[in-house]
Length: 86
Image (cartoon, rainbow, N blue to C red; front, side, top):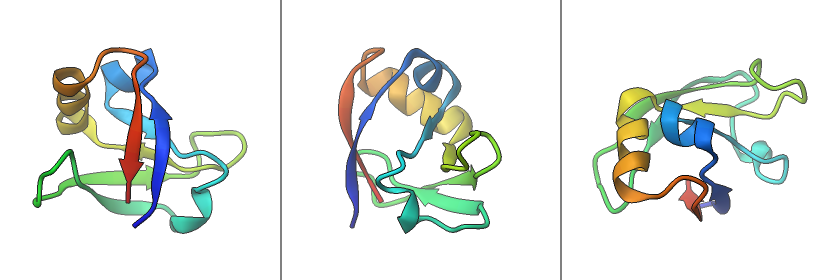
């Protein structure tokens, strides 16, 4: 399992996505596509998508839609910092 820090920026918190840093982008597909996202201590994942077209440097952006947004908003404050695992 890979763990990295994520600052929950306002856009991430309000829209339900996050960018993966350059240090960890190598662990994700070069092509994008579906990803399973595990939130908190849940054993059931939500379906997300990953693209490398959203950022100019081609680092991944993970979209988790309403489920990820709701999780961020119910469990963290804006601009909070925490761990993301994959």
